[in-house]
Length: 178
Image 1 (cartoon, rainbow, N blue to C red):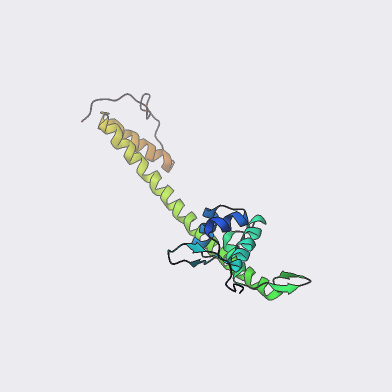
Image 2 (image 1 turned 90 degrees about the vertical axis):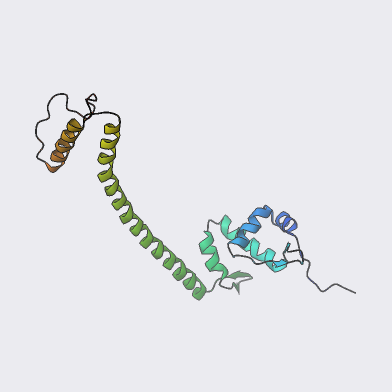
């Protein structure tokens, strides 16, 4: 009496058959690309359809497609064409549109992060002199000299810098603290 139940493979056996590590199979499962059945003991079990799907994923990865693109491709069926299987023009359009939407969303995020980065850099530039002043004060430098240096630096950035006196550079020796 023949057994009509399809053979199920463990992670190790499936990985060996596909030439990858068990971790690779688990990763694709975590990404939602494959959903194996589970045994009563909660072990992953893969059937022939799972192996075909993994083989397709691995083939697409070897061609350089991203997992996002592969996810979109797996949503569409392959159609028989000239003895092989290909995507229809409509499927290709749907894949393109889905990936284009993802790229547009990423472009928007990149733009927003760029604005946020500029704001953070501006705030950092504003806070750095304050931090420098406080560290130098705590190191014992004279408060009046430090405040004069800050005024001169602010005037310089405003374009109306008074001539600096000799010995008043940022690296001046610490004086008496007040």
